[in-house]
Image 1 (tube, rainbow, N blue to C red):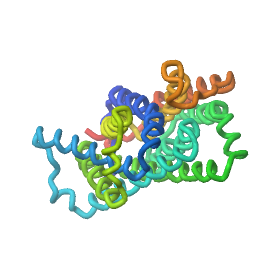
Image 2: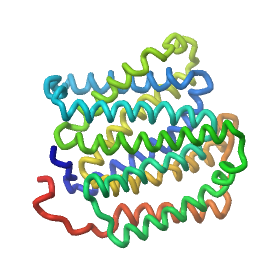
Image 3: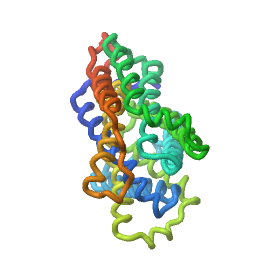
Image 4: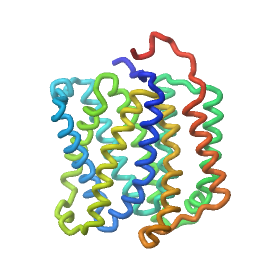
Length: 317
């Protein structure tokens, strides 16, 4: 199977990547709210179920439902299985790690996911970094070291539960990178909406035996809104991410996704002003602010760095 090559519409890829960053940045806060009343299996099952149902209805209305015979071809179903299983693992482990730590800690560790995807793309898809992009990667690494100084210290001095949750988040990041690389290759032969519908449907089936749908009947209005937001976030954010991969190199998409913790921390700093009792406020030092500036600068240096020379015959028409 030939490797996938981006369409070259980098502005659209950048815009979709930034939308993904915004949605993923506020997601941990909403997930923390839903975990107050539901278990991780039911939350994950519900998110996949709603995303699958809405996407199926959308494709059906446009008469674009996938051809099942095509999905059964040997190369495709194996890649779809890999993408489905590893995204399901990512969702489950991320929620378990989040429940045992905090949104800030979850976001610093889950950044191993886009970094791993970007480095993996250099190897799998033969993408290349320019000198400016490698410099941006170094700046990005320094920025995270400063930005999450307090969280990194907590990893060394905290309880066994906190450390265990952090370990789950690292595994979640690795699982996500495997999913993302499989997703990009699937784009060579399938539209992004078809891929996501198949993944959502498969993941829903995987979590059905462990979910407890009866718990949904006891939710109040506030927690229903939070849960529905998490479900819609799944549909829109992953749809935008999948489309971004179709138009831009995976290594550059991964660089923009590194901005996600900045959105999360910003949300946690601003939320107590309007809702003091919802979630514990995040304390950000001057060192953390400097780190945030480095993170933003490094991410965009990678994302918008000089495009390396490529063989014109290898570019997707």
